[in-house]
Image (cartoon, rainbow, N blue to C red; front, side, top):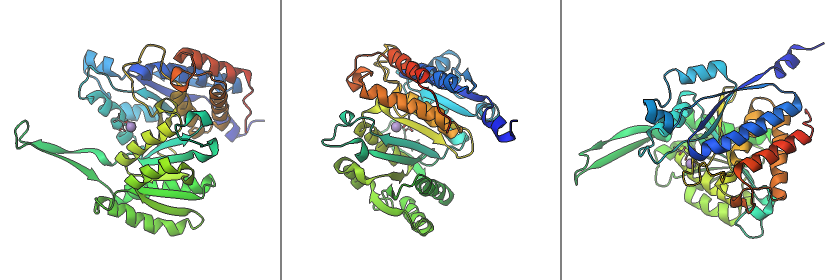
Length: 367
Ligand code: IPM
Ligand code: MN
């Protein structure tokens, strides 16, 4: 007899795939390959549908994010697997802003989760650091801050030109990302959380972060909560990354810190991310961009995208499939079955094939 919850957990998952531009297309193809292998190995049905929102499409017919796209995604899909956007032919990157930031804002994906986990000690540029020393997650606020595109230009192209770019920080927005960080720490038995801001220079906007932080801390007495200004945090991440477990930061600061974090664990090619609003549809993408110089040459490292697919599986309630993919990635790195950025000699597609084969050959055990 099947219970209702079993029926639900075994029902098909619908994934929207948006490869985007350049290397985004290359790596997403491999993530899809590995995702399909993991699903097949565990008997999970996944239905994928691809969308061509990209520079090509924009240059062809002017479409960036089609009207109604966000609502359509919410109604028809469980999650979104995203590649990368950016194309030298679109100088102002308008399509990238409208599609990616458009989805983050319209779907209210307020958590940008960016785990920085060292998969193999050889991958870090730091001396004498092991896997245990580098395992933290950055929660970047993803719907406000300096990304809201409020501002304007006055006296354009004159010597007196003025450009204004506003940032917003709302009590609700700050509270929900900080709370997410604390709750994540509690759920995952992480004892330390560090909030980062620049309140010494931005006392209004980031002063709010400090006040909300002070209000929340007592609700999580078991978590050792600390604060570092963002410049000091950047320095500390390099000096002694082992002190960090959960980092929470405003949008732009989190953007910068997450590239730094990615480099500490092996480079942009290995870093995954999830744009999340707990309980709702999320968008999962590698932290790297479309890398036009290596796009289409079978050179891009697919690991960041593959691990983003694993994050997606976790988020839609498929932790066994996610774990199987992570294990395959860990073994591939250990055995040097990697692209050249990690010292291997394989191409994008060959790494994808290797990972898919590994997942297929090793039973996915449901937990
Ligand atoms: C990222 C990217 C984007 C961002 C760009 C493409 C707008 O750098 O996802 O980190 O700044 O959020
Ligand atoms: Mn970035």
